[in-house]
Image (cartoon, rainbow, N blue to C red; front, side, top):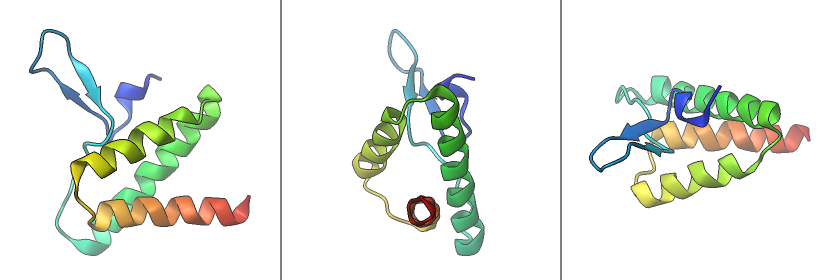
Length: 89
C-alpha cells in the first residue's frame, strides 16, 4: 500500500502534478465519533509505518496537522492513540 492510499490522506490536484496532503481527515462534527476516527487513523498509520519500517511518515502527518491549524476531536483521538502506544512500548 502507498502512503497516499491511507484513509486520512488527501490528494491536491490543483497543480500540474497531484500531491498527497498528509492530513485530510473526514470529520462528522460528533465529538465521540471524531475521536474514534482519529484513533483509527493513528492505528492505520502505525500499521503502515511498521509494514514500511519507516517512522518518517509520522512526522509528515504531525507537520500537516500543525500546518492545518485545527485541534479538534479527530486530532485529539489521534494523539491519544499515539500516547497509548508509547506507554505500551
